[in-house]
Length: 358
Image (tube, rainbow, N blue to C red; front, side, top):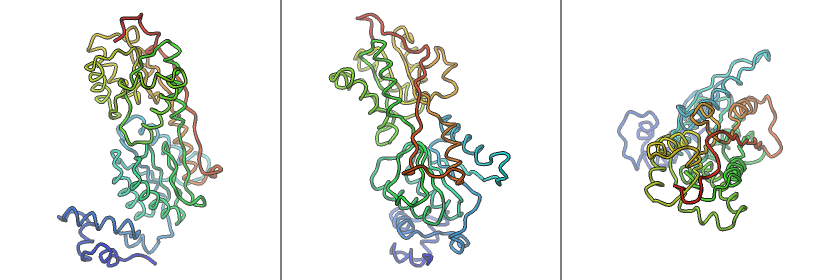
């Protein structure tokens, strides 16, 4: 039986009018009150849209695609590939309406957009990008996804780990081998002779950051058990944007600890790394090697061309589209891991002679 607005109000300890104000927006509601109402909506599974309540079991041709940053090439390529694959030519399938939701990497925005998509009776949902590793958010997200999937709405997690939902639900996970890619990249730098390797990691508390940093450290450990500790002071956490790479590299230079290579959390960060090094008069790769991650289109055109790890974004988008439309059955266990590939280019080279390392 559908949850009513009055039940939400009673659960939150407020009036139905207050619930209506929170749901409709545009009205001033105290922050604490708004939070209680939003929690009640989430816990009870209230769907604000009246027609959607009446047709809760029905779905539309709308597919919601949640991305961290629509302006980021990583997400643009992924979403573009997914949208193109939603309407394969020659199969007689009706075109699906892909709605891209920009969360700015905020966990609360993920839940809010999922609630809106549920209210619009979305025919499928794809969540892309790293997951926030926060137990409270993971529990809330799993509950929301499970509730949608239980009504027959396919959900695909793309580029993030699986959620703790019942195995029989139509929830698929498409993962990237971030750990293995970072491991191979670090092995490449080690094979060139680098030992003082700086690492500009992504934001802490994100699954992508954890996997890539763990792969990097695993390669160091395998080569020499003392290397992870020796390079610990050369690891800086930053965002995924160009300015983050620039600022992190300036911080590394300010600290004064020598390094001969910098591995960046992604290619965009690597461009900021390169800019800061050039500004300091440091040559790439003669003085310091630079590497990225993702293999975005511009990597082959940078000067020098960027060594990086290729993440199969277009393949992942196409696969997510097939899974969310039911054109491909869920794999055993619901999880598919796509391989990553080391792309060696001109931005990495053997380190300079002893004594000239930055």
